[in-house]
Length: 151
Ligand SMILES: O=C(O)CCC(=O)C(=O)O
Ligand SMILES: [Fe+2]
Image (cartoon, rainbow, N blue to C red; front, side, top):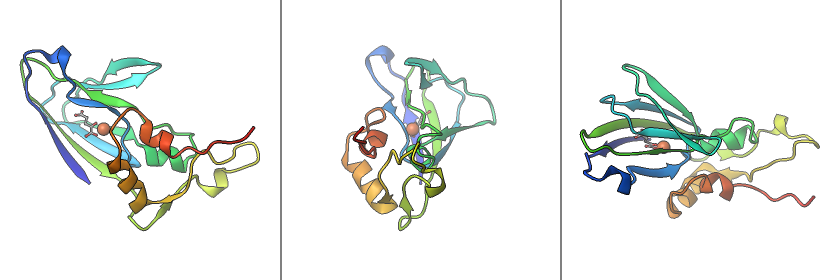
């Protein structure tokens, strides 16, 4: 799936979100910041860190599916987009995910007594149906896939 994002300039940029904080539901996202305008930020240790646009460079984001398949070893990155008052910003995201009839869940070789499955297994089609039915909000999609362990 591909998405083009257009963020018009805004006279009061601190009052709006360009794109609310979220992690991508995909396995991997390849992102191009088209016109080299700042705006993308990632959450690291609770802080929002700007990602500087580099000419002719892609950004590769780990998405929730990769977090689920690796049973939490690779963690999806929470990110958001801000707007600025001078110039429009454009980005182009390509989302990579397994085919619709595949089942995603923690990879069996990664499951041991010490590392029980952290996530449910689900068909990709249902996973995206659930994703689009919910509000985009932080890592809520990943959280929704978690299983509770009685310890
Ligand atoms: O505009 C950006 O840099 C981020 C876009 C994004 O996070 C998305 O399309 O999922
Ligand atoms: Fe995103």
